[in-house]
Length: 240
Image (cartoon, rainbow, N blue to C red; front, side, top):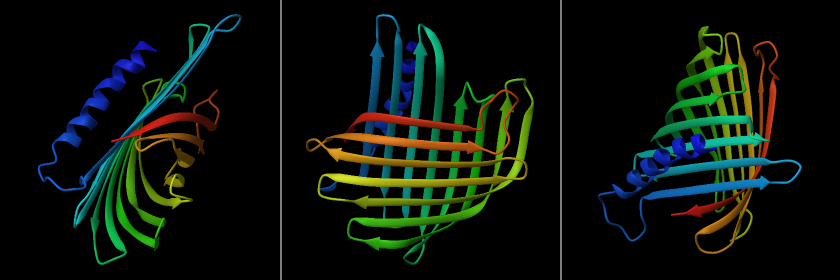
């Protein structure tokens, strides 16, 4: 548990530093940031602890849009670690004539119970905002990329892939929001599919409660590893 918190602190500091470096004073900041945290602990016959933390910082300018996300998950049962995962994702979009844009994406994941020491993927491509209405947007993306992986046994893998993604943001009301992110990375040997569904409700001006369901499946996995992972999280989100 201490290890995950220690690794998370630099991520939050980096996000905070980026937030503070905006040199252009405006009535409404060009930077947006959020931090979310969920923690559950039980004691007695069963001692469990679960920590789920995320941080996000983004900015949108006339021609560019940037977003950086980091997350950490740590769970233990009777002092035995049962889940430990860290991820970092960054994306930059260059706006073309509306509603088109070009994107560059890089993602890193370290899941200690996946059979992999790490996975890194990079992709570039074309995106289009196919729905752009008040309170409702839908972005679709497609492009080529590559993925590098290292297994627990030290074996390394490198393959070309095609990346497709869909991102839906829907403001259900002034205080609630629904989001869906669907990602498919189809490689030469391994295809990874991931869906992240969330519903958030505002508590006050800066604080919200969020429920997130994550589904991830991998077409080929090391022996003894499940090919499907799911995660349900309830977190508090603070928006800066």
